[in-house]
Image 1 (cartoon, rainbow, N blue to C red):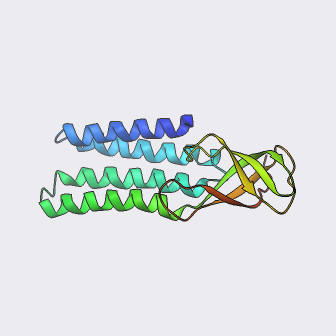
Image 2 (image 1 turned 180 degrees about the vertical axis):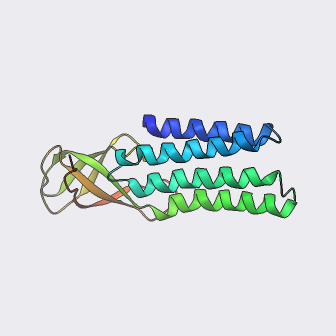
Length: 167
């Protein structure tokens, strides 16, 4: 796990605890949401190849905290059901929307390439064998397409070599 994602999750969990267990302290709730937003903006440059995933996760955390902040003012059961449905939809869309990742070529022949996925959002850290028609250079960063099935996504093919990072 990436340390920035860990910090993001820690701030989110602190926000959850404050929203759920501390009543009538709107200033502290808003302060944690602002702190989470500023952390997201500060660490955005660390995610070059997976910026869209990072922004989806971080802005989703911020939206969930804002909705939980309003639970105190709208104690209606319909509002709470809408929040739960929004959280489930948020988790499902993360799995369904993002079918690209990146990794490093470990070895390559003209028929297949062995790739170690280095994306911090991808769970599996093992080396995957992906069929390919072209030969890639060892230690080259490549963009990889994942299967469309939202559960247990596996690498299907190499899309292209990733562009070089800006220094």
